[in-house]
Image (cartoon, rainbow, N blue to C red; front, side, top):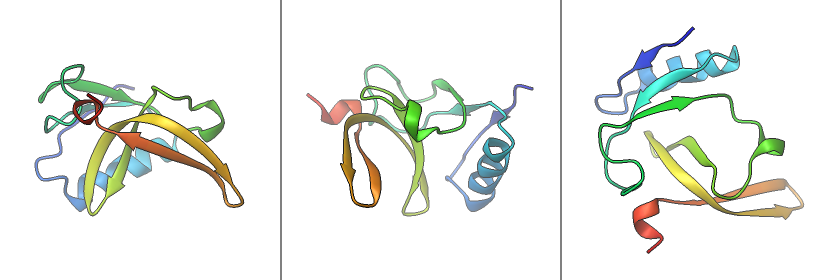
Length: 97
């Protein structure tokens, strides 16, 4: 089932709804806000989101995550293994140049 979510102010309700959908392995479409992923993903682009599976994640994949009550989409630039498991180092595409 395809669903469209709009995050006006990256509000708590939208975040909780996304978590719930992903916990049930549902995909949904998210409207990108901001310019940190320019030029590949301009503001207003539609992103299809699926469940995060750490073992299947590679450098160059794009992760959607919570940071300081905001939803962010950034590219994986490096994966580091340490005693606590994998850490995913991410960065917006506009910050890579």
